[in-house]
Length: 373
Ligand code: GN1
Ligand code: MG
Image 1: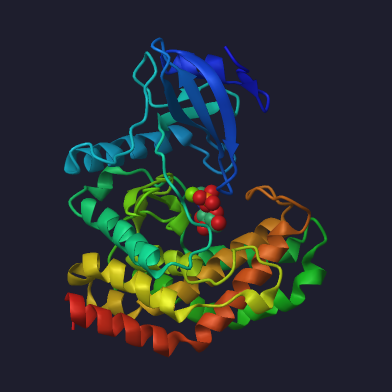
Image 2: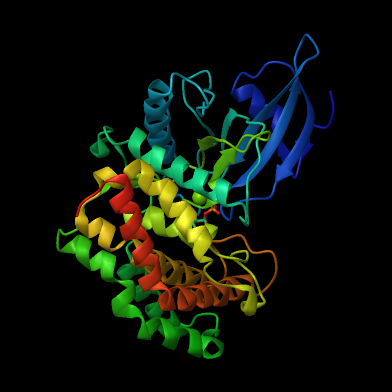
């Protein structure tokens, strides 16, 4: 047996809870994601073959009720597994008492284990074909869940994409200014305040009943799509922690925020940050080729704007975390959340200047692939 304790966690003990066979031969940390801790743990089976699993320690500060998260995941993955006949589907392992998690009550020791996919992911996208395929992957995810009963889902993080509440919280926390950081971010706060109405458009329309709630993924970064190593065809969408009723625009917009940005989410050099219109077009084509026929006119009309709204929303969340002591998002260095904020605000500003062009592309794709008039 190789090393079984890694980063302070006893993986042999955790694996035994999930009744995994064999012995651990290798453990690697996967440094993607801003919330949970992820590890690839490879087992050597009795016949000598190697079998990798994905172990995740769920962040119980972010997910106050992780059991509900896992209940949602159980239902959604079962639904998709059945739809896809088990091909390229996520499968979570169960403990002896039939739970898809292992939790030491009263601690933050909350683990889950799923099948590992040999795959490739993209943090920055340049290949238009891959971006179009990412659009198809998230569009298909929507389609797979069209007949899923949304009332079965727990709201695992209340008001997760309620832009208005996110912005109000930011301004409240800036006022309390517990960590004495508000003075240095006056410009960012002023900019967000000046975009308040526009950024809250989707939230307002939802409140007025003019946009429908659907089952959405709510974290549609392109690096949440696993692609085949050989031909880059999409295998599956991962990270189902925030699958909840939501707005299709926010799934679309969050994917655009990530896939159309010519720089990483936390780029320091703001001259590199901006919306690449070719990427935008590629993702929109893929996404609308799947869901176009099912969207309402209001949804189509607000798709481009949704990218701006969610980008301002995320900038506000990063800034709020900065102001309240960096407790929510993993940070790699002091000021990381402020760097993220500035980068996302630069992206939002660039998007704002391109909204007409973006909406023109949406309209053209909706016409091509069907959709409300
Ligand atoms: C978080 O952990 P990760 O990277 O999948 C966050 C998303 C943000 C994203 C920004 C539960 O997702 O909402 O858009 O960081 N997830 C949660 O990178 O808050
Ligand atoms: Mg996530």
